[in-house]
Structures are given as C-alpha cells and as structure tokens.
Length: 110
Length: 110
Image (cartoon, rainbow over all chains, first blue to last red; front, side, top):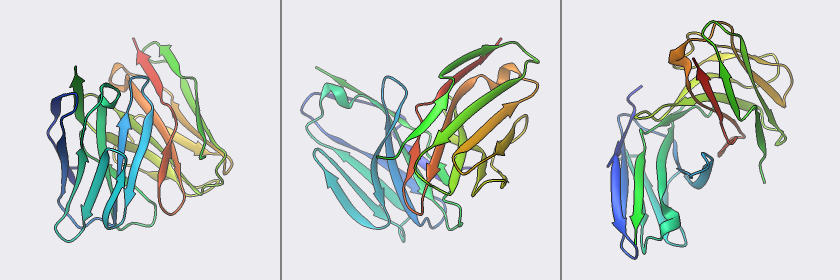
C-alpha cells in the first residue's frame, strides 16, 4: 500500500558533504527500520527504532511516531555509502509486517 | 549474527515454467517473509508465516504460493511463471523486533 512515502527518490552528494532522507507515514507506525541495498544486492540493516534517535558513525536516524515520520542523516559522505536506502515501517500488527518506502538512490561522487 | 540463506541466487525460466525459491533461516525466528523488489517500488510483501504450517497472504500474492515446512524453511512457488514475475526476491525472518534479510534471488522469466 501507500503507507510510506520516501523522499527524495534520488540524491547525489560530493564526498564529505551530507544530507537527510525522510519517510512520512500515513498512519501511526510502531517502529521503523532503515536498510541500505549495496551493489551486490544485499539488504544491510542500518537502524531499528521504536522511538527517539540512534547514531552509528556517520549515520543518524530519528523516528517520531506521533508526527508520523522518520529521517536518516548522512554526514561526511564517502564513496562506499552509495546505494539505495529504504525505510520500512512496522504497523500495529502482530506479525512484524513491514511497509517499505520506494527507496532513495544515493550516489556519492569524488 | 542472524542468518538467512536463499537459493538459488539467480534463476532464469520460461513463461509457464515451474519455479521454487528456497529460504532457510538459522535464527530460530518464528516469522518468515517473502518480498519482491522492483525498480520504483519498495519491497512488497508476497506471503508470510509465523510458524511451521502457517501461511498468511501479503499485499501482492497473485501468482504465488508459499509453504512453511519447518521453522527454518520457507518456500515460494511459482507454478506458471509469467514475465511480470521477473524481479528480485528477498526472504526475511524476524523475532519481535528487527527483520533480517537474505541476499536475494534474481528471477528472470523469458
């Protein structure tokens, strides 16, 4: 369904710069998870948040269930950060079903 | 570390062909899922299961069957493959929090 709206769909950054990705939800979500799909097609878990913020290296994510959004901030971008980033939100079901955004294709250039 | 193994990694079949995609998880997770990922879309849920013998219908189930034979094994069956089912398929398992994905199976129906 269209429960998750992710933006931007594509993003180009120069090395050393930063930006933010955003997901808006049409309904209250219980948790959000961020993934990066690398060049080999694997989905790498970045963050799982039920609330608040988490930081890991140059990545920081926030989730506000009440305001229905989540963000992923990238700072000091490196070439290896290139890939497609997906947010996925968990609704109130008992089965951990995730609703995915359509992805953000990030290209980091020298 | 959570492990989800998909096989085959790549498959080409003809229209009308019979295909089985396999997924095994060694995480003792109750929940397993099959998603497909297509350009311009996030991952879309095909079928999922919360235990051996259980099957739940996802968002895009048409043309797919699934079977959960054991807690570890979840199969996706395409009995009459069509070109519209050309896609990248991801299997996943989860506990009550994070979801862990396999590396994907690229299926081409010619």
